[in-house]
Image (cartoon, rainbow, N blue to C red; front, top):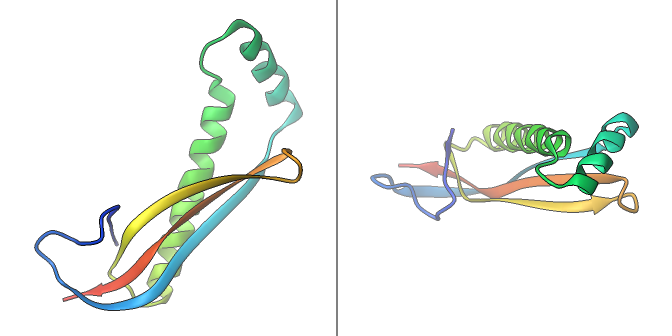
Length: 105
């Protein structure tokens, strides 16, 4: 699957737009991870616990978007983006990957 944040694929032509491809992941924080992260907030620096959590969420959302695009018969996803949103009154975070699923010539 070709992924592009632009609206074209160099050297290829978009033959057909097959629809919106999307995938999301909603994850909550773990109390033990929050305790360590809270301490890091006090002393400063990168909060590795949250970095890992969000990286895993992005990968899962991306994998789900690719699966959705494949189910639509797409060869590529163009205009691909990520969005994040807090859910459950800040107790969870949603990561959404989306773009335009296309067939290439």
